Length: 426
Ligand code: HAM
Image (cartoon, rainbow, N blue to C red):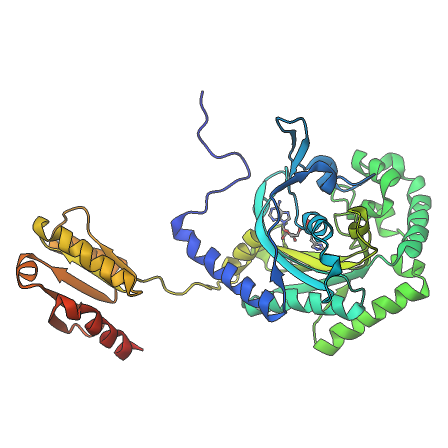
């Protein structure tokens, strides 16, 4: 049987929901601009190697990518995240040559991952993300975390926890990796198949396992803090100092390693603790990465960024009963009172629109009463009436809904009258 339903894990965003998307997009754009970020738009598919780099251990790369051969026998992957594509573009377009580093780039758009769908987890979802590339400075990490936190607080969300950790530099991480391998070697048989793979590829990722989360070996695992060399410890201390100075509350989470392989030093997540969120409660996550720009053939440059899940933000806003939309309304509804007036009503509607008034009219030959119901439903500020006598006399009747005042003016004076009414309403 033909299946005309949308694929599992995808969703339509319908006209009755679009207002909150627009409001969120506008809010995020404003905040990004405030922090001096500029938008970058990269393709929603890339060559697979952009995402699949070497011996990557992440679930995202190993299990969740939509990868296919195109008609030219190239392996293509639908982007599962934004960071890799932005770094590829940064190198390809030589943005590293800019006099203004770090380059601060933001993006918004759909990402695709083959995950098991549930509330807050889709196969197509939308991220807003930022990447500041070209400066390695703990206070830039602080600024980035501050941006993420201010966005969520600015939206009105309160039930938030900032979780922070460091993965240290390469040397610290290598020492820690060895310690973890040692530690898990005796219990490896009891861990899940994914953990066995992680043990070989990147033992840090074992700490992130949802299946073996409560295994005793997890609880007794060594902590990264004990393997940090002095540079890494100093870097992390400055990040904490900066967050304290800005008054951003956080908790240090030893087991926070993040699901992607490219991180070094700072990693963080902002989680909603509202109980209606369910298990998908991480609203925003990111950290510092060192090797990506080099991987794409660029200079040795470090980046710092995060991405937030826009669907999850909307769920969190609902959970905290926050409405970010402005009341939807139109400026004028043009009532067309008989068939002969239709052409004139359309001309009037078009004139209103060309002067910046959001206007609508009737195309269903409905009764006067039914059209007035549309005036109410659309919350029109003004009703403009066109009937036979108005056509004959070249006039319009205008009814101001808030005061119920009515005027009859020549059609040439309609815009003047509308301007006057809207001026008074301000
Ligand atoms: P991520 O943790 O994979 O990081 O995703 C960031 C956010 O995207 C998550 O916290 C969540 O809100 C949302 N998200 C992820 N997967 C799904 C899904 N299947 N359905 C709904 N929402 C989802 C990254 O993507 C990194 N690129 C972040 C980053 C930027 N790191 C440095 N720069």
